[in-house]
Amino acid sequence: MSLTIKLTITPHIINLNLHPKHRTKIPAYSLGVRPKPIYHSNALIPILYNNKQPRMSQASVSGSVIKSSLIEPDGGVVVDVIVPECERGSKTLEAESLPKVRLARIDVEWVHVISEGWASPLKGFMRENEYLQSLHFNSLRMGNETVVNMSLPIVLAIDDETKENIGSAKDVGLVGPDGDLLAILRSTEIYKHNKEERIARTWGTTAPGLPYVEEFITPAGNWLIGGDLEVLKPIKYNDGLDHYRLSPQQLRKEFDRRQADAVFAFQLRNPVHNGHALLMNDTRRRLLEMGYKNPILLLHPLGGFTKADDVPLAVRMEQHSKVLEDGVLDPETTIVAIFPSPMHYAGPTEVQWHAKARINAGANFYIVGRDPAGMGHPTEKRDLYDPDHGKKVLSMAPGLEKLNILPFRVAAYDTVAKKMAFFDPSRSKDFLFISGTKMRTYARTGENPPDGFMCPGGWEVLVKYYERLQAEEATPAAVSA
Image (cartoon, rainbow, N blue to C red; front, side, top):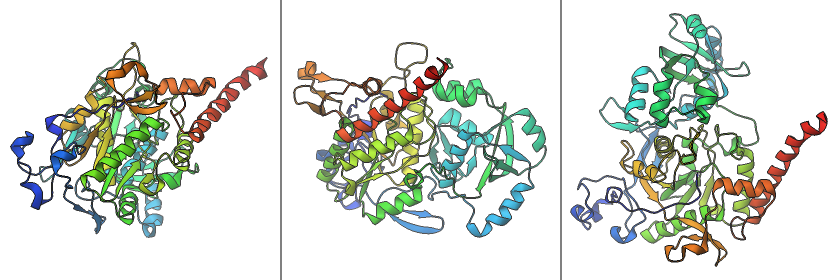
């Protein structure tokens, strides 16, 4: 993903659900929007809104009401399919007696995502009806006829042998890569896995070289099995980062503990540079100008599968920590947590999933930049997706109307001011655009980026990582020589 971010204001993203006593102060026709109250908006236009705030809402989670000044989760509750501790023994014994499905690493990541409610109201791997709705409509229709966004199919593939072993059984046990029983899948349904259709509709291409496709779809089985999950215990990775993996319920409670009246989420899969920080700090400033008292930043790096040349999660988390230590972001108004989803690199289709999951976590503002969830075309020298389509799709996507979408101006390195700044087209020659690829090249070759591009502590983390990587790559050659 490019590190430049653009602000574009279009009429269909200027809606804001104002407090009732202020709603009549802004005639709907003057904004070119429907008069009925909806949330979907570009909320960084304080002049239009008289500095008033969106209406507060409440969300019910697991039978109890969690006060939420933020946003209601999809379906009204945050799904939690983790078996209570008092029932784990009996459920484990039952799982041992059932036909087994062995999970790949990517499947475990999806079990994690579902179990904590990131995909609410989804309670398990998709059955065919849900799969077709997700694949063709990027959404699911609930029993009450409301629509929730669900742009990525969340499915479990099995091969012919596993399908035969399951036979007519309706419940199966799910076994992790290490042989541990992880979950029970209830009331299962098995249906055909049309890989070509899935790939074409999710990525908009069947070109070779798509990372997620080559790693997990092409070698997968020809069948999909859906059903309701019962996860025997919380998913842990024991990698020293589990304390960062806060569930949607934990995040909502933390937002309330900090008395947040707005939460703006920023997803990234790259290290944080000062351009990112400029955008995040500017967002908070603008929200304060709108009348919010305590907007909180959710800095939410993606923690599941990423392609081989991306910086590993552990290195990114160490770098993010340095950004806070160096004062680039304020720890008092920032929560750093890991979003456990795998990365598809599916552009406008995938960015809907990223936004939807943050609704369930309690964020009511979502920052979107240039080419979100995108990548270079795997066989041609161009972007796979139009870099502006992600934010445009978010402004129109079914089921995301209650989320405030925040597009941004371009941020680049100002060679005169020697810092990251918003791009000024009147002196375009003074600005340097440093892509994620260029940033990684700097670190890999030991070349320092321009002063002011990234905090020194954060940059040192990257340099040391690439030094270790180069040493590891050189070791086999030295031994064989």
